[in-house]
Length: 113
Image (tube, rainbow, N blue to C red; front, side, top):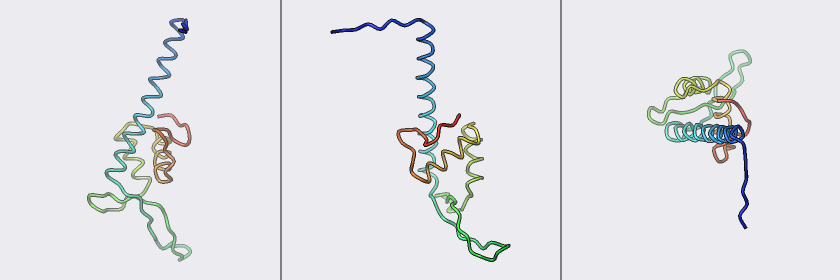
């Protein structure tokens, strides 16, 4: 049995806008994650704290081609400039990529592009 759904033009425009926005969001996440996977490795850097003299560890990224180490802030700024996304979005995508919590192009926390 077939059923018909009747919606107004305004409802259709809202629905189309929502679908396009979700698709754009997921597509942007997938493009950035693909770039990260191809060009960077997750790494841990050990450094000596100048004040306490203790050794500390922090998460960093290694550029695969040059094997140089880049800190998360610099990589976040690079993502912001390259893809024209917000600071919060670039930070969230790096956090989720490191923790492996990106699922089907969706981040663990909903942030604006």
